[in-house]
Image 1 (spheres, rainbow, N blue to C red):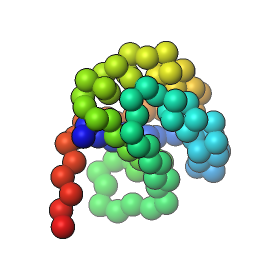
Image 2: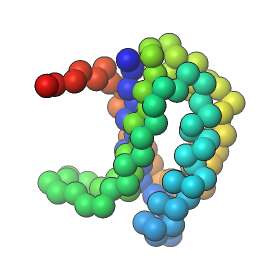
Image 3: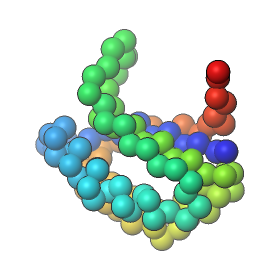
Image 4: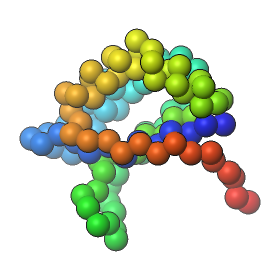
Length: 104
């Protein structure tokens, strides 16, 4: 499995509530349409501690079978639409490409 984690920061002038509403109701369907996407989780940040910079407003977790599947999704028209939408309510995003390992 190949997991991509995005830490998302809302645009200036948008409240946390406005961010949450748009992200959950409008942006989520665009991401769910990505080809090869196996799982999509949105985590709305409601608090944080110990940060050296501003807290993210949301964390997105996208799972694909492989990095190649993610690369194909990243080049898709669906991802282009998601990027265009994000430009309307997001100021910045940190991306993390991971290989998850369940720890029992």
